[in-house]
Image (cartoon, rainbow, N blue to C red):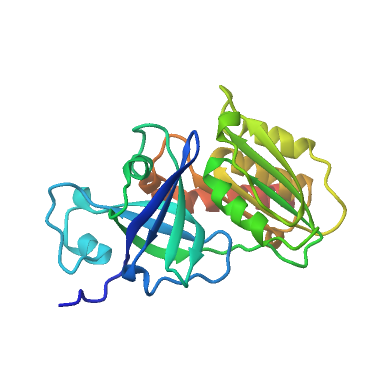
Length: 278
């Protein structure tokens, strides 16, 4: 009997690839992605579902049902990842994972993934694609934003100016990026410095081209907050020309960050409004 309709997609690992020292690509496919669809955005994201070992979950499986019927401590754990690519013809979904040994949940899973492994997926969501009418583009992020930056570069029009700043641990973490745009790509190496510190300094020092900018700035919440203030107050970029968000927060896992992210965003917006008013 066919499984009843649920709130998730079920992907099967087709292949994996080590892209760099700390990034692994996992491609999933199969009939369980028959209803998966994207809308042409370059920051589409999905939530990957990880089950707790030894727990008997409701059948047919549903994250919503789990949350309605099970104690919180055994709810499925969700981790948010950018859609690097989606091919509706082959039904293949490409996801890139930052991997730091056994740290975290999704990274170690990706490092161990083999063809035939299953992955439960919620989504996709998203809200950004480069404005093809913009005079130039600013793309800024750490490793967590690298898949979206790579997808955005591929979507940029021919010869449009772009300034791209990406912070990674070391040169071994660089990836080859493809684009038809007139893109100046600068890799920044974090080393022992705090995450995002070099990005903030580089954006502050950047010579902005003339014309209307469409900006994408994502990564660790602390440096994103600093750059949002700089871009809004000092550079004068209107909010509707700026896609900016903390993908993650130092010291918090994905679930803990989701619980406080709304309040954190509202506080940032209130501080920004007060600064503008003064």
